[in-house]
Image (cartoon, rainbow, N blue to C red):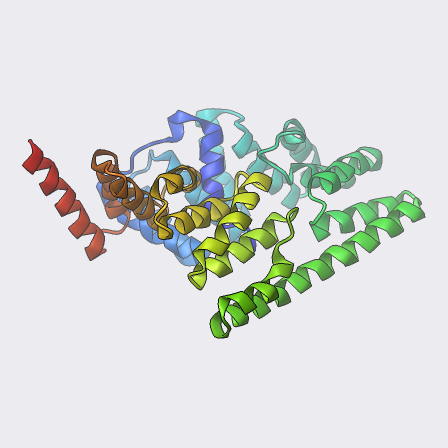
Length: 350
């Protein structure tokens, strides 16, 4: 599962602080909602068109510009992405999220000195787990192999299940004529690559089992995905259980995934969904709030959060969230009807 830029925007916006939390103009919100859905489907070229239209309608909206820049980045439209990120940098200064993306763009452009300058302050920042990898590559490109090795070793320690990290570190050791360490990392690269391949096979087998077998038999087939130290496998397992309505089985893998990767939108979203479907509404609220904070313009998250608030009797909090969801997707009849009911209920109580 590759990170989805729409979710990554939440982290980037969070690092900019409250100034970036701008309310979108009504004529921009429908474009934003369409763009987020397109980005979730990895249709970045179409999403960029919607975001460009939203930005034309609301040119001072930082969230929209960040989403647009991140979408351009995913499309490797590097110079266009840089222009958008630079506009935000002039407003907010060298904020960590902006430095991370601009540093990666510098790396793509082989401007290693600038990449180092931007990424070095993020080397130990837990919000940017891959920063040591990209910093190591920048040092390698700049002809500083010793410093590159240090950063890549940190990257391997922080992301031990990432094949790319082990491959890059192995290459660095080979260039330093440290053959034993290079062989160790190449071995880890092969193992982690194979682990990913097996996880994909296991996910397919699990999905088939959940579709055609009783749940007790399916659990046995799905169990190999339940690695307590691998958030990606746990999220995949939780998603598969949710997709096949085995919500009780999804809770614990997803709860563990949130501990391993507290910035994973998917982990929080599916955990909240599972608890909601189990009618454990009060328990569902914290993960749903976290998911909405990580991806504040994801329609389904907002609707689910509002539904959970309504289920615990907090219609006053549910209504503005539903209204925000409606602004993102005004054609959804169910949300429109729910808003009308909540507004009518509030009027009848006055």
